[in-house]
Image (spheres, rainbow, N blue to C red):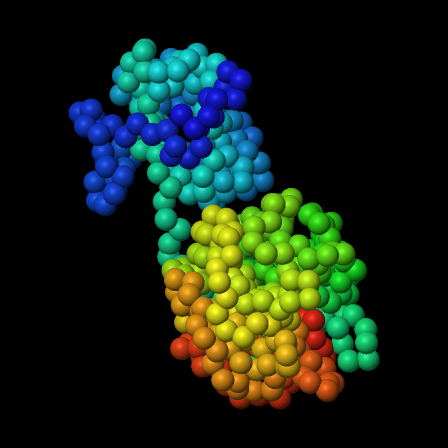
Length: 441
């Protein structure tokens, strides 16, 4: 049991599982045994139309795709059942982690507990099969597992947006990046003009810009066609000079920053682009950091570098596949702030540029297990406050920023799928710094 709330039993995902075969044999949670078991359970089931409502009544012998994109769903089981009756439920859009399902056993027992207990499932991607055993045990899960979110396809396109332009003014213009790394001319700005913001992809194929100078906490969603939406009212502490990356393959996280002092709190972004309230910070509070995704199917993330008080740092903080930020990892490479980061190679990342004792063009590669490498000699013009994002599924691009002595620039540097940074490409679009970028598909 995962927890008791009053007299209610709260079951989260597969925390409480009875995996029983038809002969009572316990099934393992690995390999072909579980897959074969699910195929056996699904045989003869009559699958119904997709359920999107907040309530539904289930019928024995039927299977239901339950879409909770817009709302949670309470499922009422039959009021009477015969031994062997089976019902299957499946997470249609991998949203049960945000809006779960509640099962009302309607007078019958559920895993031996009476119907005064609320049974909840709240993990993305679950397939759930329940079978009626007898009056004592009632309905018992015979399969309760999250299905892996595969296949995975990295994003083809990128977008640079917002920033502080030459002539000292904030802007909201954006510049799209094609799947071959070509930056387009300016797209008229949508939303509040601002600088010092952050951006990340979410939902597998979309992006989000959020926070920024002021400081503010508003956000702007980016569609999978690269169209930026109007302002969404902010959630979480208003701040600037933060960074962001994706995690879990389809979600995002904003972290760290400055608001009358350095911060370490984070805000998770759901796979529907909803920003959550503040999560208490882990690791050294700082501003001017950068972040990127890495790992298999880009399921992991890393925050790195920045400035704490008067001191530049190089420590990093890893982000797990469920958005949990780890404590500080001792820094590798030149301490610096106002740098950028992006992914490359399908499972790795790269930090680049920034300033400390001087302006830098050097980079630091991140392995597919989150290990940061020592400095790679600079290629391209050293500068501060650029941005970086993925493109072409396995490559990256750094762009814009402020070179030593100025003025603001729109130059870019492509990153190959082996992490090699190319020389400067003449800039396109409004020259600016304190900019942000993310990928989309």
